Amino acid sequence: MTFLRALVMLLRLGGFRRLVVARVTSQGSDGVFQVALASHVLFNPEQNADPAAIASAFAVVLLPYSFLGPFVGTLLDRWPRRHVLVVGQLVRAAVMAAVAVLVVLGAAGAGFFLVVLLVFSVNRFVLAGFSAGLPHVISREHLVSGNAVAPTCGSVAYFLGGFVGGITGAVSTDAVVVAVAAVGVLGAAWAAARLPFLGPDRTGRELRAAEVLGEVGRGLVEAARELPQRARLLLALVFVSRLPFGFVLLQTLLLFRGPFADPDQGAGNVLGFGLAAAAAAAGFGLAAFITPWLAPRWQPVPFAARTLAVSAAATLALAPWLDPWTISAVNFVVGFAAQAVKISIDSLLQAHVPDLLLGRTFALHDMMYNSGLVAAAALAAWTLPRSGAVTWPVIGVAVLFAALAAGLPAAWRRAARADHRPLG
Image 1: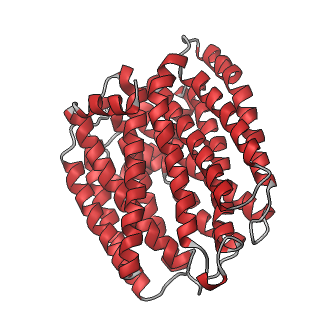
Image 2: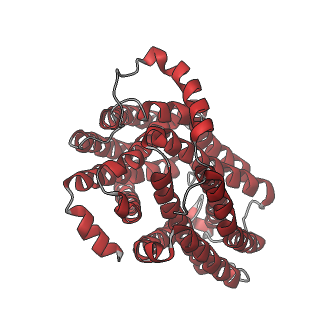
């Protein structure tokens, strides 16, 4: 089934349609917000951050809130997910308003990043809720298509939001862009309020806030004991598959701040970096078109392995050159591989993890996802020059893709045998 056919078919389902509207509104607002953040911090001539400082910013924004994952999962498996999504969006809108005030004041230190941290923390909570709720609006046989359509629509909305944020920033200020994002998040809260039941499938009283800490510990023990081996393998794959994306992202940022920028462009070539990001988005889109068609025919694991093998060959072919067009092509290939693997992982997790563990599983998914990005940024800051002008990282990406392609099928078979369940 092609992406467009899957999109048309799934949008006929009222619950899925509302879920997509809520996700698109939310992620579109994320795109607007992150344009303002990049303009204020990464491409601000007054900041002039080096690779280590940029990696530190990644860590401040991504790594600490990954520790919220167990809390997020516990709540998503015990509180009504629709209610959590509505409250989460309202909290995000309020904190974004605080960020706008800090931008007006010119803040960019630790206090500023702590407030930004809260925005991103709640956002991961929201995205995990969307993923955990998906099986409640579509049938199991349509999970692969759903995991292609819903996140891809969200990704397209994110990049369109980035475009809107860029246009708004060109005629106003970063603070105004943040305010526009906050208004969009209020719209996302309204859309979330219209969602159908998203689980969890359980009975009994709701958890009080004072009980959360104890439930987290018990929930982690339960997940460690009951999570299937295949799910553990998939969570490890989430981490490893994010390394190429994070490394290439930071190298691309350095290149467009340095050798790919004209001398009169201040802190860097924002437009060039935006085009490279658009190339990554196009890779996401291609993966979303291909995956619903090929993954059911080949099965998700063989499809992911073959995708990684093709991506390894493509990145190796691009490795000898280093210019804006080539690095954009590398972003396209890495984006394609990342999205194809992610769709496969999400579908397999939803198929092989019990619903009562699903919220915690996707919270752990987000932890591994962001930890992979932070690890890649830290590795890039340690190994890359300030200019980012080296070609060996692309070769390294090709080698990693090839190793994953070769090892994944055998690792999946071993995990399936350990689960004593039929291959999925």
